[in-house]
Amino acid sequence: MLAQLGLLLGTGVPPVVCLAAALLPCGADLFCCLAVLLSKQLFYQDPPKEQPGRAGRRLKTYPCAYPNGWYHLLNSSDLMPGQVKEVAALDRDFAVFRGRKTGSVGVLDAHCPHLGANLAVRGVVPHGTDCLRCPFHKWTFSGDGKCVRIPHLPDSVTGKGVPAKAAAKAWPVTEYYGMVLMFYHADGEDPPYGPPRVTALGKSPGAYPARGTFQTRVNMHIQEFAENSADFLHFDPLHGKMMVPFSPYIVPFIDIVHVPGWKPGEKPRPAAAASAAAAVDAHVEAEDSEPAATTSGASHGLDGVEDTSHLSWFSDAASLTFLGKPIPNTAAHAEITFIGPGSLVMFQFDTPVRSAEGREGGSVGWLV
Image (cartoon, rainbow, N blue to C red; front, side):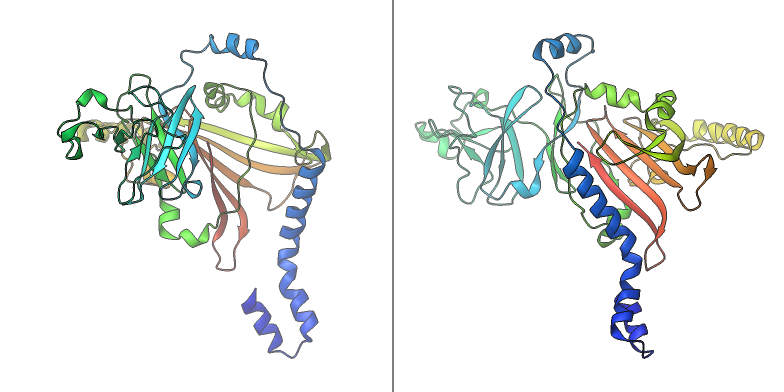
C-alpha cells in the first residue's frame, strides 16, 4: 500500500485522492471485519452447559473418554519463567511450570506423591533450576518427575538418597507454535509421534501473522468431530446456505457449493511395495484421468513426516452461487489435518485473494 501511495504522489495527484486510492483495496477487508465483529456482538451466545447426567450417559457409548493424543493445556505466553499453573483437563489436575534455568516446560500430576499436596498451589520453581518444589515438605521434582531432593534426607542434596518410588507422574510435553501441548496415553506410554511442523510457517513466518483466537464450548465428544468430517451428506442441508456470521439468519439467494474429500494417512511402505503401489496408482490415474491422492507429509505442507498413519485429511472445495449461477472469484479450498484422534486439528485455507507480492492468499489455524 505504501508503494502504491508513493507512486501516486509522484504523479502530482492530490494527496487526499492518493490516500483514498491506496486505502480502497483495504476497504472490502475492513468492511467484512467490522461486519463480523458487529454480528458477533449482536448474535453470539455461549452454548448451554450439558446436563451432567446426560453427558455421563453419552460418555458410556464411546470406546474411551479421552483418546490417546496431544492436547492443548495453555498458551506459551501464559506461562512465564518460574511460574506454576494448575490446569484441569482430561478429568485430571496438572501442575504446569516453566523452568528458570532453560525455560523448558514441565507437566506433572498436580498432587505430590508424598502426601497429596497440590504442587500448583504455592509450589515454587527454585532459582537456577527447571524443577518444581512442593509447598508442603519441599520435595523437589524435575520435569521428568524424578524427585531430586528431600530436605530431611542427608544424602538428598546430591540426589543419591532419594528413593526412585518418590517420583511424581510426569507427562510428555512440547511447545508448538505458541501452544503448550501434553501427550496423554491411558496406559502411560510414550508418544509414538509428534505434532507436525508446517512447511509454509518455517519458510516465511512473517507471511502468516497471528490474527487472534476464538474460544467457545462445544457439547460433543472428540470422536464425533473426527467422524463428522467423513459425513459428506450433511454438507448441503447444514452448510449449503450463506449465513450472517454468529446468527441464525440466512443470506437470501446465495448458496454454497461443497466438493468434499477425505483421505487417511498410511505407514511408509518398503521400496518394492512402494514401486508396485506407484505402478497401480499410475494405472488408476491413466484410467480416471485424475491424479491419485497422496498421503505423504510433504504433499500436505508438512516437514519431515514420512509415517502419516496418525494423520488424516479432510478437504473441501467451496464456491458461491447466486440464484444457482456461479459467482466468479469465490472459490476457496480448505484442508483440515486431523492429528491423532483429532485432539489437535490444523486448518489451512486458500483463497483467490492475492497479496501485494502476488502470493495466493491463505491462512493456517488450529482447533484444540
